[in-house]
Image (tube, rainbow, N blue to C red; front, side, top):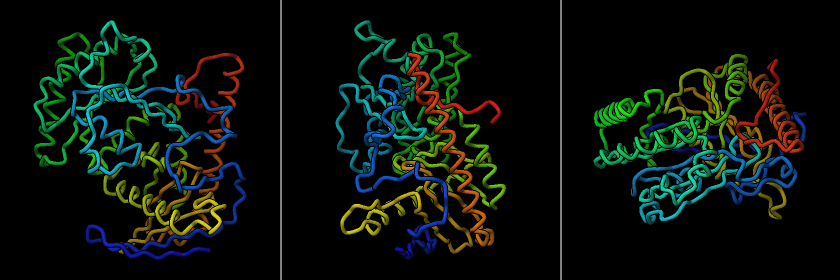
Amino acid sequence: MTLVVLTLLRDKTLFTSVMSLSSYEDDAGGDFMVGSFQDFGYGTVDQENEATASSSDEKPRILLMGLRRSGKSSIQKVVFHKVSPNETLFLESTNKIVKDDISNSSFVQFQVWDLPGHIDFFDTLFDVDKIFRGCGALIFVIDAQDEYVEALDKLNMTVTRAHKINPEIKFEVFIHKVDSLSDDQKIESQRDIHQRANDDLVDAGFEGIYLSFYLTSIYDHSIFEAFSKVVQKLIPQLPTLENLLNMLISNSGIEKAFLFDVVSKIYIATDSSPVDMQSYELCCDMIDVVLDISCIYGLQDDNELNAFDDESASIIKLNNTTVLYLREVNRYLALVCILREDNFIKQGIINYNFLCFRKAIQEVFEVRQKMLASKTENGTDHQVLNGIAVNKDE
């Protein structure tokens, strides 16, 4: 047993963190062994999962588009490569398509394409069908600190042309670099861009296209929350995950629960209650603490044992009687819950309900893998995110 007690001061709040790497008596099975976090990131798919892993061409794509120096590459580096925001100041402008394969054995399987802002990809020199036909979402980044008239013109051109090629694309607009703006300026910028962008679409005869707008910055958690919303739209079984989380919190006295991809800190699902930004930030910080402590203190001298496995857990008690509770679901997914200290007295019930929740998630994965294997045998094209299936009765 390894026990680490931390006392941290953050935003005038005292944290007392109890990091427990003890064993829980559960019989959830050994299918969810968690790998070492020494080289934590999106690596190759486990050998046992290679049969069900789809090729890169079959994965839905998220396109990052916008004018030059709008912050597309910085977003990609911070969210998916754990690069410090300050280090992105030295990034050069992108001159070619940069592809990131985001792969693990859970729901988060897609490609992120960073497209240079100075190139017209609708030119006849490019195969627009290949670029946009398999696209699940198109994120257009607008620099809020710059004049955005040109950006809005390119947004309108990009959306209208891409919609003609693939009407199923989800269009997302990141109003980026808002960290230097006041709250009033943020609201005014979002209102102005929202109004102009939709008016341009109506004038072009595309009033049926829906645009989603987000205020983002790489210097806070807003970029992670925005990407979470984008990824969730690409998961057709999101209602199933939300229902599982709703059942978990209602039977365990939990106030809020997130299902996190721990590499990127994107939450792929949460319960039906509204998301509070401060709660989300606390959960993100908890994941960072757990990973750091696990990698430092969780490894044995021979490094043969994983720093973090399916028996690992973390409990953080705040001085306002709030408890943060983390349990690993599989190698890349973690459940992070927020509850009152009075309700945490029933920790045994919470642990049991978590095992039931994890088993349900495992069954969803198994159904998906069977569907993918069946489609592969029949030679049917599929996409990983769109291929997740559950029984109709569920």
